[in-house]
Image: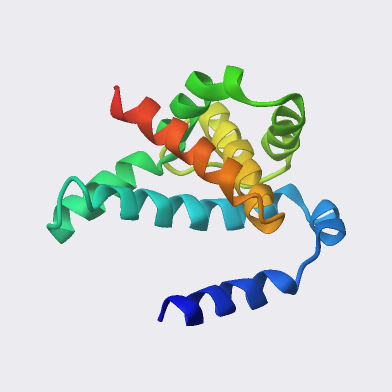
Length: 142
């Protein structure tokens, strides 16, 4: 099963090369980053609880725009200039109004997700996981 997973993930990411990633809208990379962060958080929460209701409630709280904006503020100083530039492009992308957060929080979370999505699509998994760890741990300290 492990080998199949590696093959599927490898093939999936082979559809988009690094030059194509640069041409994607920040909202597209945010879409991918949102999905990745959801999976990351859900997986990390398995060390805390295995009860589905608790998993759902905790993950919904952590992946919310408000929580992501808080996490970003706490880890921003640990990002490179290039990563902050990717974040800025995502934050400034024109998007729909938020449902349950402030407009500022929503834009910050979009920038954060855009950064994660770009790292994922460029296959920079080591840095992607470092940033997710930093964000998760920053929120865990709250």
